[in-house]
Structure formats: C-alpha cells, structure tokens
Image 1: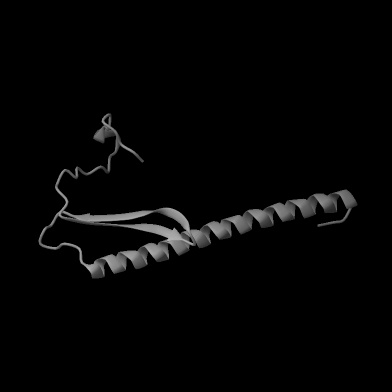
Image 2 (image 1 turned 45 degrees about the horizontal axis):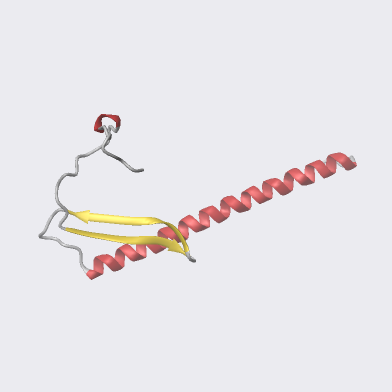
Length: 101
C-alpha cells in the first residue's frame, strides 16, 4: 500500500500516528531461491536501545523462515490446482467413456 498526500487517517481505524523520529531501523529481504516475496522492516524510536548485529541476524533468520513458508504455501496451492485440474479431466474422460467415477 502506498499512501500519498491525500491520505486520510479517518479511513484507517487502526492507524497510529508515527511522526516520532526513528533512532534505529533494519530492513531485510524476504526471498527464497532467487524469488523476492517482500521486505521486513523494523524500527525503534528509542535511542537507548539501537539494533545490534545480533538483532539483524535474528531478523535475517525470521525473513528466511518466512520466505520458505511462503514458498511452500504457494507450492502447495499450485499442486492443489494441478490435482483439481487432473480430477476434472479424469471425470470428463470417464463420463465420455461411460465409466462410473
């Protein structure tokens, strides 16, 4: 979602104003086998607790696991669509040949 200058907070009941400054932020790609699914972004406004290299490693692991889950989910959905198509084709074939399902 991209919000422009015509953004109206009243149209988004869960909107929270984030006009505070960002003291520390991290962004990592959510990708698997060369396919980019998105980006994880986290930030904090508290300068007393900036993100560390350990935090970045954890976020990278989270992004990696998220990407694998997304890829597996998409693969499962694709397989389900293929199986449904095969079943329909088999049913049509059986109906043409007079076989009972």
